[in-house]
Image 1 (cartoon, helix red, strand yellow):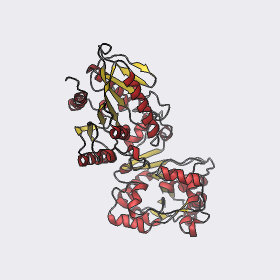
Image 2 (tube, helix red, strand yellow):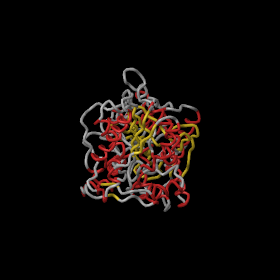
Image 3 (cartoon, helix red, strand yellow):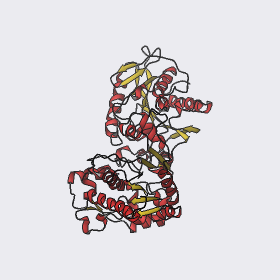
Image 4 (tube, one colour):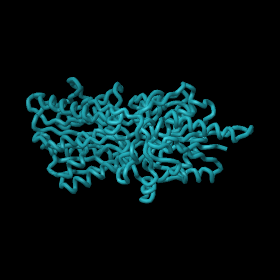
Length: 512
């Protein structure tokens, strides 16, 4: 019989697991609900991750003692956000006794790294780290503030009330004091991704194809994933489905990042952005100028041409190869622009993390200035075309609207920071800008097979644009996925790219 040890996350206690535990036990398993000691002591005095690890270890030992000489049961430790830190610590202290660790909507854990990373709000993380107060507490959120701690998608009003009414302060020592591991071999791991938080299997695979070191570490035997179409608290929004996933994880099921016995992901070499562009374009050479590449049409020396700057998404890990301006999708768009008589431009920018939008914005601004200074470019007729995670970078340009910026475009964009990013920088929220109106024309290519979390940001942007009277033109590709240019070579996808380009060229007053 499998025995599950369920460890709560930030501000929560055993109550969040009750429905999931009941379903597990109805299927013949046993469930142990951990009440972390810092939640029971006054002002969280002395509470830290080591004390929480010790309690989970006590739970494991109590399970073994109850066996009373019989065969020891299989133990699965389940941690939700912060709760995975004491779960991993306990598995480290009891090597060989834990069959699997399940991470519920949380990142991997490393030795010597405090659990502060489970606080999604970047500004709050920085304040807590700077203060260094390990003896105090972090007050739980008010009812309307829970979305700052994770997507509340799927939660009923009653569930949100319960989350709020039973919330407890989080001892700061649990977040600021590092987890120390002995180096013992840890058991297999399963990650439960919550799509409405912005974490999906597609995202994980894309980060792996970018060469993300953390994702590479997860492409190993014994590491599996499940994805749930819900927000950050699946034990409240879909407890029965979460129980089914936990049982399947205990059985070793789930999706792996490995496709062959050598431990290689065969899809890495053919990830969407590395596949051939969906249109046949002229194989014209690039001109590399620092961080930008130019694809120049014939005749631009005699008569300067408008330019379209194509802005890659991300985050893309620093040092990833090839860099985005060498991706077939970006090259394909730039060459297609040149085929249509305008200068196509690609660039590399520093969007290496979700906190790096200011650096990426500065890189883009410098690149645009360099493009406009090229004598073959008509400096008064520029368009910016954004892809995927570069969507938030549209906000500064929508707000400034220089007269030479004739149009913005965006393909399958992320138009607001996703719930699990914890980024609240108002400079990169395009919806807030278009709601005020007076913005440049905007061509938005929307795919029908988008993840729900990204689609929600697009819907919010379009609603704000309508309210503000902002000129947004939507080109729909109903059957296409995110990054469709390398994945969907159907006539409808090709037609959508041609239509989007035609609309952008129209704003640049280029004859069709």
